[in-house]
Length: 351
Image 1 (cartoon, rainbow, N blue to C red):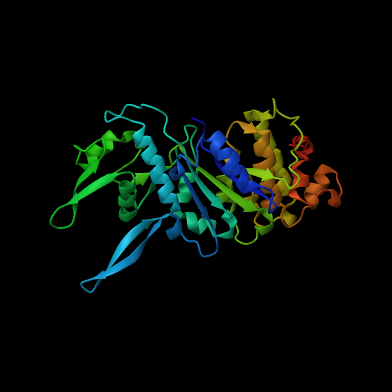
Image 2: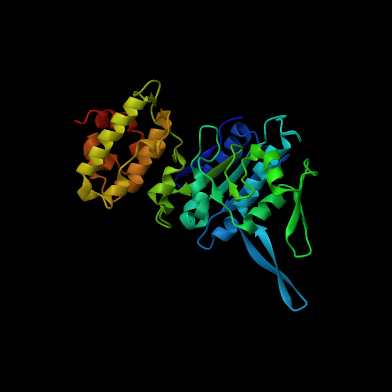
C-alpha cells in the first residue's frame, strides 16, 4: 500500500488543482475508483461559515415527542472519512485478527481549505496531522463520548442498553460474541483504538488532500504550525516545472546537508529580522521536513513557507540572495524555478 497523501495543492485559480486530485492522485496513486467505491471518497468545501461541527459532527434537533425535543448526532466530513478508513481496515482482517488483504484507501478532499478558519475547523484533529513512517498519526487525541460512540456506530458497532439507558453490550461483526469493551479492544487492536479512554489516530489508508488558491491566501490566516503538518505542491498556470535539482544526491539531501541548510537558512532569516514580523515563529526546525528531504519538498514546502510566511512583507532579501532584479521575482512561480540557485547560495553563506 502506498504511503498516505497528506498534501495541499496550491496555485492560481483555474490551474487544475482539483482536476489533478480527482483524475490523477485518487485513481492512480490511491487506487480508488469513484464509480465502484464512491464511499471511499469524501468531499467538502471550506467557507467562512464552516465549523468544527461540520467537520467532526454535531447534534441536530430532529423532532418533538411528548413535548420534548429529540436530537441526533450527525457525523461531519472528517468523522465520516475516518470511520470509513477504519471500516476498510476491519474488513481486511478476519475474526482472529489475521490480515487477509490490504485495506482499501479512503480520500478526504477539502477544496478551498483557506476560505475557512482551518485551525478552528480542525480543532483537536490538528494533533493527528503528524504521521509516522508507517502512516499512522504520531499522536492520538481523546474524543468526546458522543463523537466516539458515533465513530463506533459508523464502523458497524451495535449497542444494547440496560434499564437505566447505559450501554451494557457492544457487538461488532465479526466479533458478535464479544460484548465487553476491554475484550473488544483486544480483538480490534489492529485499529489502534483505545476504547476505554476514547483515543483515536488517523490510519495509513486515510489520505487528506486539499486545494488552495494563492490569490485567496489573505482570506484566513494559516499559522506556521498548521502549514508545517502538510506537504505542498505548487501548480503553475503554464504547467511548467522547475529544472532538475543539482543539489544533494539525485535531488535528495542527506541529514548533514539538511542540517547545514537549516542552520544557514535560519542565520539568513535572522540577519533580515527588520523585514520579518515575529522572527521566533519564522525560524525553521530540522523536522520541518522529515527525512528523506527531497527537491520536491524544498521547492514546494520550504520555499513556499519562506515566500508566504517569512518574507511575505518584503521580498528584497530574496532578491539580493538570488542576485536578480525585483521584476524577475514577482510570483512564487518565479521563485521556485530558481531553487538550484537558492540552495547553492544558502549553502555558500558563512556559518
